[in-house]
Length: 219
Image 1 (cartoon, one colour):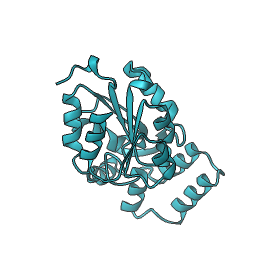
Image 2: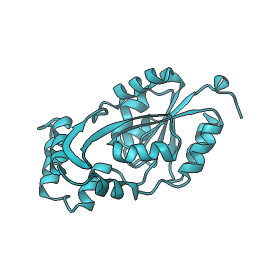
Image 3: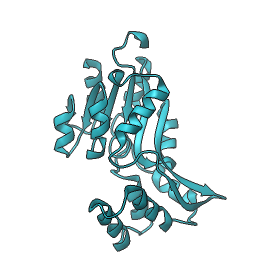
Image 4: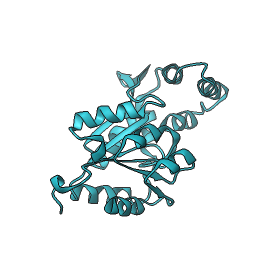
């Protein structure tokens, strides 16, 4: 096992939805499982994409629809999302090589905290749904805003005491571009967004994290 001090890169930061886990959005999955991916949900999304409401307001409107729902029901659906192929073995090997691991996601803490525990991840920044007496309050805390992953990435690295050039970032979508641009080495994971593919140092064309591990070993 290599000593962390000898590594050119010291931390690997992962997007969660669509990267570590298979579903592209934990927000959307909740709507789908509750039968709420309807006209209102689509309307809020459309208003945000057209710039008529802020990302914060978009998330607040979604969270308010879930007010008073049992948190256990939401958690059950989120925890059923499968991991990408060979995620667990890959992250275990990265830990053995001396890397710190982190999650940086616009997804939800009800899933991210489980992933953090399952995969023995060191740091996690994501968005938070508030729960009181076992039920969702309808409130949300935005720690990672759409289009601002770069800012959150810098904040995460400051907390970890690691320089951006010592960080590897792995993501799959347009929202990952700001973080990928800052990282010392960026991996696009099975992305359909050409902007990320063009920016990344390595394009993982498969859905298998064995390829991610191979890319990191060569970085």
